Length: 148
Image 1 (cartoon, one colour):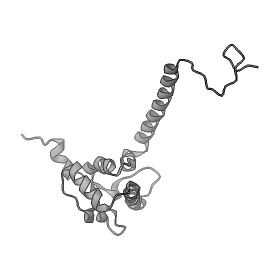
Image 2 (cartoon, rainbow, N blue to C red; image 1 turned 90 degrees about the vertical axis):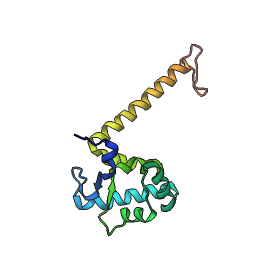
Image 3 (tube, helix red, strand yellow; image 1 turned 120 degrees about the vertical axis):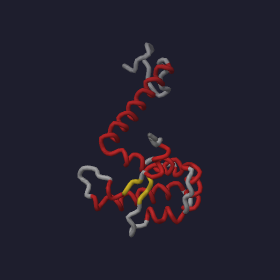
Image 4 (cartoon, one colour; image 1 turned 135 degrees about the vertical axis):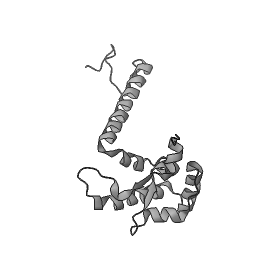
């Protein structure tokens, strides 16, 4: 019995924009939201549809044309965007908004909590490495405190 690998299945896995659901969001509102998000990511990247298509083709290993990107983001179409291309799209555009949207609200909240924890830990590590080096603007009373 042959069990297909993820790589064999991935090119056939597609995200139907109208099928992604988050609580409190009507299905009819999702397709334009995803299309707008993709367009915003492409615009923020400063790259043309053609350049994004070329780079995405290399990243995902499948020929993608600028015309395909236009179809995925056209307001009149219910486009199917391959889920296997989401990470590549985010890499090429330099914007992870589409990946974050795909996570859904619960996983996104966990990711953001982890990001905040990482910032706190980095700040703590900086203070530890600096070993009590004081700000040059702090007033001192001779014993290292700021009391008057």
